[in-house]
Amino acid sequence: MVSLCSPLPALGLIVLPAWVYRIRKVARLFRFFQFLATLNRLCGLVEVGEQLQALARELRSRPLGALTPGYSFARALRLLLDDVLPEDAHLLVSGKLHISLTAAAGQSGGGGERGKKKSASNELMTDFDTREELVEALVATSYIPLYAGLKMPVIRGKKYMDGCFSDNMPSFSTGRTITVSPFDGRSDIAPKAGQEAQKKAHFISLLNQEYQVNVRNMKKGAHVFFPPKRHVMQEYYNLGRFDASRFLIREGLYTIKLVHCAEKAVYVSSV
Image (tube, rainbow, N blue to C red; front, side, top):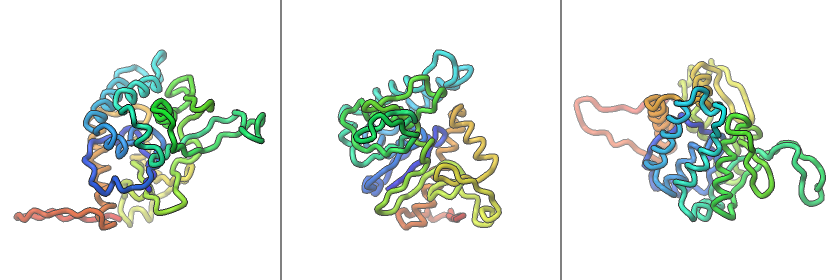
């Protein structure tokens, strides 16, 4: 099981090894953009990656980014998803992809609670009856009120927004959950400052995820809402690939073949 917390800057193009497809569940939250493993299986990352880069370029071209009057990030994301997802996408991911969403507060409950107004709560959505439901769920997991648009996504009569407002790192009750984050912190796959530096670091816990307090995380937080230039996004990707390789090597799932030459590359783990 894999739980992802991944905003736009972590975007990258990667050929995934065969063992990735043996993962039983993927939990997706806080931005659509790192829905990479599933998208790789559905439609190919080269096409998706270029479209996401184009979307980031479009946001950079606007004076206030997604907050520019008249622009709707949610609408742009729907168009992108409608363009790249195959017709049977909902069938391919049902039961495998778990999308973390926050059900908006103030909605009436069902069943015996009909008429009662519920507070905001987290839901993991995994079954999709139609392709449109899957698209809307992916839009909802990227929906930040006002930033992404004025109209909240509606699925089966309920309004939803980004899962980060209720649980930013869901875990599964069975099996091991591998946590992934582009932010410096304590996730399994994440930037690491080294054992000694981490001992002195300060952390804050926010909605089920621990973040290291540093300038790099503040900068990445700003890039979530205002995408950086292409070369910066590529740098984030390269760093993310290194973090993933470090974890896989440590777990014995991936090996590096050294080329015999005058100077051999040596992998040093900071974990």
